[in-house]
Length: 146
Image (tube, rainbow, N blue to C red; front, side, top):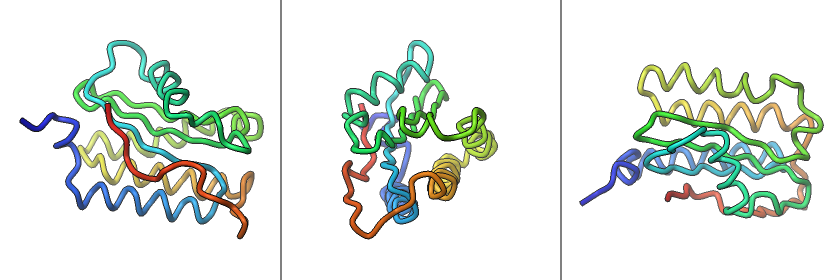
């Protein structure tokens, strides 16, 4: 039996999201990941913080990891950036990313919502963490689940 998380995205949609991550990471040295899970009993941001650490996203050289977290069944999500990012971006930075995603999510366009957020992060973080030719991809680009 396929879980809702596994059925949430088609193989094509997963590939589109991974391609968006790769394209965004060509603009910024930020390390972007997407994590899906079935449910989140509490606050999505708190759960994203736990996963951020579990996925070792807080181990990047410039403290510039970004996690897009979705609890599929509960229809909750959070976008979380590491301390290096939060020290330099404006106070409403993450809310502006979430607002663009939420508009798509309300229309049940989850893939487009994720891609919108990923592209915005890549574009906006390029000013603070530009990509350099010697940058290495510190974290895998594939979507993780639990």
